[in-house]
Amino acid sequence: MSISTERIGFDQLPEAVATILQEVQSLKGMISGHLALLKPEEPKVWFNLGELCDYLPDKPSKQTVYTWVCYRQIPYHKTGKKLSFLKSEIDAWLEKAAHATAQEIRETAQACYGNKKGGRL
Image (cartoon, rainbow, N blue to C red):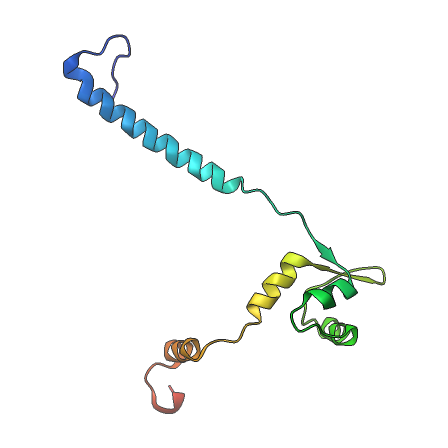
């Protein structure tokens, strides 16, 4: 709708208000979309081997972590001979390593095998 911005009469007021409300909603949508993209990033936190052992909940030994690295079970970065661990990757690894609940296992089995007896298709 295009309304002249020079002089709005009383009879044009409802149309002008409706247009303004549409424009405001459009602007709010664009701003919220841009704000979602501009989330402040957390600074990267790096652990050395000792700091990682202290950070992990079960406080594994250094040899245990070396074994995990050898079998590529834990995310790591290697610069020369030095191992480094990025905190955000370790946190994601810990969350991913959580065991599924019995209900989640049932739902997965149901999705994969349906109602077939013995799980056979």
